Length: 289
Image (cartoon, rainbow, N blue to C red; front, side):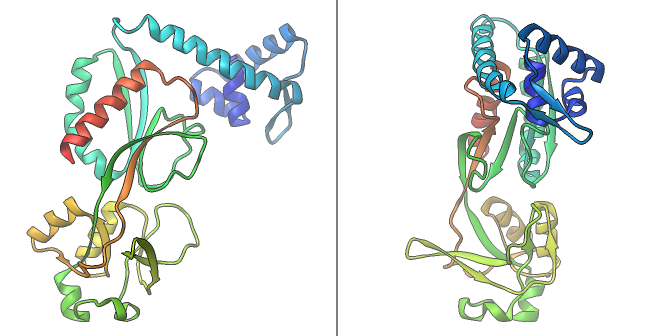
């Protein structure tokens, strides 16, 4: 049933085999045995994709609940035992810089665990890419995901001293004369905008730009290089300001804080090892923040 669940979700025998790290023939044989035992065709195979049949849809809903119950039962007897297995986590580049120096402490407390840390600012497909937990800032795009708030990320408006010397100190009524660094971690056709709060509401002011970047490290580097105005996390901005690589601009027109969340695939029960790792992340990041 677990194999059927993966094939149905990913619409692919090959991708399911990759995620479960088993031969594709094992996937095919398992589905065939399940269909023979139930006496129903669960998946419709074509040359391009795998489609769930009506009978498969009915089984999918039931076996999701059943497997969740089995996971919950298993977790009852793992409370006092050593956690084991693999955890796949993805987090923004800036957060990985905070987490990785402390990760050894967690692994020493749970030596049988293996953790895959991926760092990217783009929106990822938790299920399709096999992630157990993801950290992201901003609104939850996929409502099917389970989310847990970590903290609020406050932003500052900054530019390099060289940019200010060349273009002058920005003013709200002169934004059209300035350049914004366009931050687009996900493929999108959204315009580049300067966001700020006014009377409790968010205002988005379109701005011209010359450079587009897709991750926070490049965003910071572009700002330090004098390529435009940026809105970056307060802690990072203060470090760059202290180092003389940035100056604060438009201090009275700040963007609303961004909520940083833990995101989990949609399921009623989260594996014990993932819950423990998520709790450690929450406590460690809260202390750092």
